[in-house]
Length: 183
Image (tube, rainbow, N blue to C red; front, top):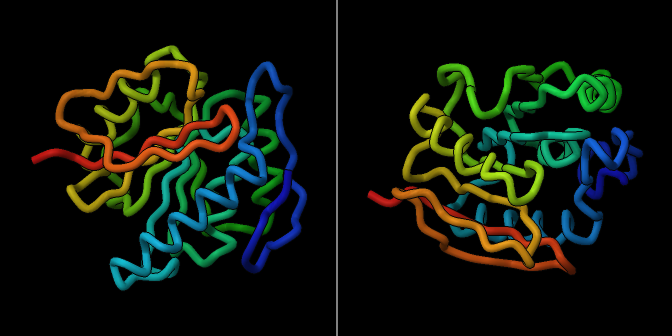
């Protein structure tokens, strides 16, 4: 696993044991960030305009990728001790990345409004739904926030009330659900 693009391109990332985390493949990550680049172009924005949240961060790979591409603010949410050890090593020298060590289902009150929020929890346990609703309740999200859920395409996921799917993209068994807040 490595950083695909930006100032940290090629940097190898450590990951916790596979029973704890499930790193997103480089192919899926590259596809996702191509979609995000196109999304930003449509909004007439670039990475230095973006606050990116990586929730259930695991190795922190998605947040580090966003930071490598120039995201102005990155928050990594993780509470597993082994995963946090990897995150701290992976983000060494990246003081601008904020690591939040609380349970992602109980985030703190808003520290910044998310432009893009990425959820990659253990599949099929309903964790992202609970966490997503809490992030909305705590003020991290607006109608302009792009919400991305990584899941297994063989698992049927329920979308919480007040959110709608605006796009789906699969890479192998990985499925990215792109959501927005319904108003």
